[in-house]
Amino acid sequence: MVEHDIEEAAPPAGMRLAGIARWAVIAILSCAAAGAWLYPAHPAQRVSKSASQYQCPMHPAILRDGPGGCPICRMELVPVARHPSAAPERGGVPGLVSIDIGPDRTQLVGVRTAVVTRQRLTAQLRTTGFVSADESRVALVTTRFSGWVEEVRAQVGERVEKGQILATASGPELLTAQQVFLVGSGWLAKKNVPAGPVEEDNNALRRLGIAQRDIDAVLRRRRPLPAIPVRAPVSGYIAKRSVLPGLYLQPGAELFQIVDLATVWVVGDVHEQDVSRVQLGQRAQLLLGMPVREAFRGSVDFIFPALDPDTRTLRARVQLPNPDLRLRPGMSGALVIEVPGGDALTVPAEAVVDTGEQQYVFLARGGGRFEPRAVRVGASADRRVQVLEGLEEGESVVTTANFLVDSESRMRGALEAFAPLPDSSGAAHAASGQP
Image (cartoon, rainbow, N blue to C red; front, side):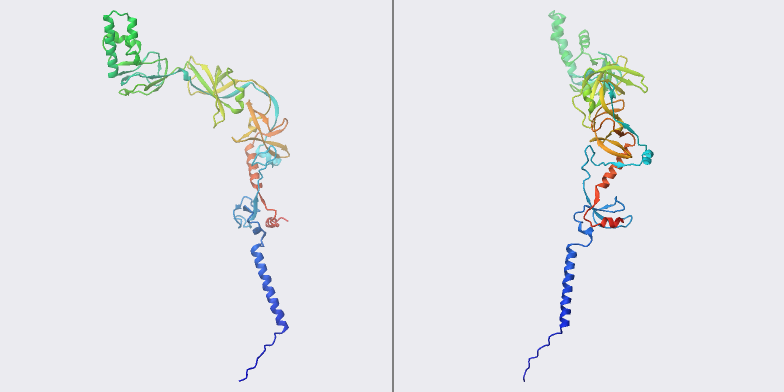
């Protein structure tokens, strides 16, 4: 059988063109898909990696970590880049920005201002003083022997005189000491030794802290006392009692604490900026009552060496005589210390906002504009504060409604910390309806 080669006829030219066009369309679509995958069409997606959060254009308080819709208006969130508004201008306060408050609103919230003036601070420093016992006049009643408490005769708060019996005690150690003393004194009596050497040599009881009058009583009785008195070493008031009948005593145990209130201490806290004005020997007075009913005069006799790290104050102490016991520990009043005065740039005390870490005021610039300004303050007197840095004479500062002005400044500063990205191709403006 004869086989014949059959040649296929070439396709028409129109079909070739159609095939080329089909493959060209496929190539274009593939390139478009690849471009869409590498560079998303939505401008918000192009900056998602550089955006820190997403914000609603109509409700700036709505911030999210990813794209989505606003829960209030359902508008699409736009990316925002957080940038520090924190580079405060000279004299500014981090976290605060200048704000504008209209005249009507200023009057409504009660904003008042005062002018920075230069005036002479009064030569007085006023603080709160607290009365306490003079620690140099506190006596502890202890024993040098062991034994048992037989009787307690003094109570807390009771006035006692020097030598008064506070308690009585007994025990083997006391009995042995009395017997040794009697034997020794009897032997000396047989040798006709004068009384002076008896007191010097027969000191078994004196070494135990027994009062001389009780030693004489043992010598007169010629036999041991059943219980030895424990007497007050000084006159004063019983501030503490740590003994009960039947308690076993150890040498050195504290039985009573006696306080002599003939003089007392008054301790006041001086602010850090006023420390340099307080010196030893300055006259001071404690004012009690409102209105003032009594004034007690003394002088500064001690200034503590270190500031309190929590309150940033230094304690100054005034010693006052108290013969009539009109001053009692625990009382408080106004402590006024006479200090040297001088001219200074001052503002009302209520104008200064003190957060503990920074101090600042709000300048009134006119037209309802208020600007935060960091300051450094110094001494204070008569409800005015010395300004060392940050202000100039003649400037106006806010004295009332500081809290409202501060709150709005902080809120504006927080909102300005978030702004739409510049490369979002107008997405934020389009979403908010702005051109």
